[in-house]
Length: 202
Length: 202
DNA sequence: AAAATTAGTTATAAAGTTATTACTATTGGC
DNA sequence: GCCAATAGTAATAACTTTATAACTAATTTT
Picture 1 (tube, chains in turn red, blue, yellow, brown):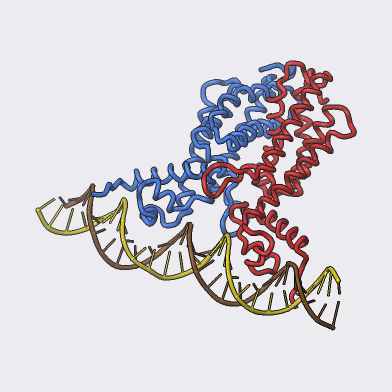
Picture 2: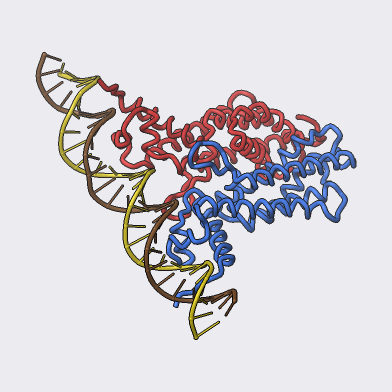
């Protein structure tokens, strides 16, 4: 007798498996056959749950986008100190990437047909919101006197984004998501120290 | 009568076309048929010049790796001021990425068979050398008193790498390599300012 | 100018991938 | 416990992609 799972459970499994494979071999290299094989199913079984293969990626992107948004919201609760909110925002995002190491791939994924980027819009939108949150908190930190007055909030946001990107690249090269949290905390502190009026750790 | 080019010229064309396509649709999506079509050739014509498709990527990676190494060498000539060398090193690399916007893709490219990263070794090695050059110049700047004494050279190098990565991501999302030089200069100065003893622009 | 070399073509094999159709059998609702 | 709904399979069509083999013709060598 073959095992039969609920559509809901199976869809979760399919999406998680696709994400795992996306980190291992890259999203564009993942085939429906690979996903099915990992789950002990036949390849057409995938099509009982998604009309098109791309629908799997769309579902994954929507889910990741939600998680990014949730982290942004969570980081703005509780602590009112802008610099602390910034740290919570960035570390929360790194935690998300650690749990879903394929996430960065979705930021630069392209459409099959033309060369134009589709970047499953949900993720691109969420990352835009992430950037807005960075800028907002940097402005608040400047107003609070924690960061120096002449600092350009947009440029500072780009540098903080760079901390994340730098860690992501090292994660992809080393294939080790664990470095994100360990080195992330220290590097973020170092970056923020450069924004203070005195150059000291805020 | 059909046009027939020398093997040397044709190989250059094939590699440049493959690089262009790699930026447009991603390296893994580029097919021998696409390259041939762009050059007005038939698909098997590619195999007159390379035994395997992967040999095209290997040749490209070797070439890019050389250019990265050349930039590192060039940046260390002439100006003896460590901070100026650092700037020349980073801006030179950004120029290279601007001219070859697919370069960053090769840093995280994966093998088809297993999930293991091959990162055409030539590029990974060159990027390691780039990082070493960053650290060396940062150490020199600390010793010269241009950067503050307590600065960790490795962490500072990661942050500078982050500036590059941040710009690269924005280039990939906007599909506009032009931003690299314009914003790069300003962001690099901002980043280096965070490393000075006073927090001022070095 | 003839001969040798080789860039390029035509045709095609082999393998992989997406997606559909018709069938099967498990499961939840009545 | 029956039955409707549906998760899953088997078979297969359509397409894409890599690669090879045999042939053709442009260019180089002698």
